[in-house]
Amino acid sequence: MDKRALWEKCVAFHGHECPGLTIGYRAALYAIDLLELTFSNDEQVVCITENDACGVDAIQVLLGCSVGKGNLLFHMTGKQAFSFYNRKTGKSVRLVLNKPLGELTREESFRYYHACKQEDLFTVKETKIEVPERARLFDSYACECCGETTGSNWIRLSGGKKLCIDCYQRYDRFNV
Image (cartoon, rainbow, N blue to C red; front, side):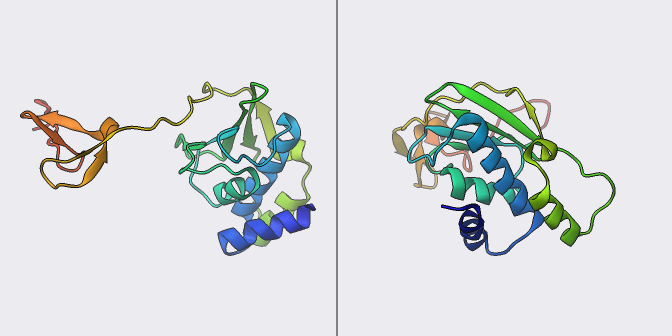
């Protein structure tokens, strides 16, 4: 698929064109080049994004990373930074968006992000975080307070009862 078609696919998923979508689009394409990535049908490709902005939608579309599959994870730092992992090769890269010189309008940012060379747009760094383990499957239990089914990794024991996070009353003697 050509780059224009890939861009249109990202726009269709996201709902509109914007500079933020362009950042994720360019990051995904750069990661594809650097790590020899293809669309991830399972968890072959992992992305840890440091933001929850528009660009994450392009990464989902181009690389097949998603929260539901467990290969799109959020490490919220507020940075336009993305770590990509290729499980097949063991290679990884962290791409950090470089700030453009000077103030740009929304339209100027959009054009800049599309026209800029990949290596000028992002600083390539080593990943800070080890590749996460593959997603696990957990047993489920009914919360003994609200009755809603909850994954066992989120259940808390209190007074001999299994409680979900919402029903559990955290004990802390300093913040009573």
